[in-house]
Length: 149
Image (cartoon, rainbow, N blue to C red):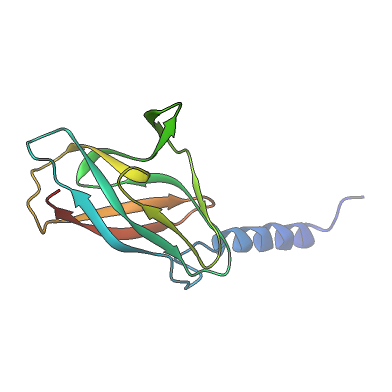
């Protein structure tokens, strides 16, 4: 026996409403944020730079960063430098999970942003917008300040 058409329509509408209000770090009203963000300016014009800072998750649930972008650069990604067999190696991080009330520190010689193909020259004090894509939807936006090494 088929369910009444109105009951099926109600269930479809309820599912659509639930999907539309699925929480993200921004929608929940929590305070995931970028703190002390900065971009290291190279000593000479180069096609890549590195970004650092601290990502704080003051949300009641974990957040997972699954991508990075910046309107100031052609390509941006999250990387990690590790010493393996006495050799410094860098690898891309496909995602970064930050626990509730936790943080992740992006620093020279560790996790950092790779910022490739700048669209314009940066000067000390310039501001760079960075957007972290979150698993499940949503974006965490931050601002980094350009600094000399």
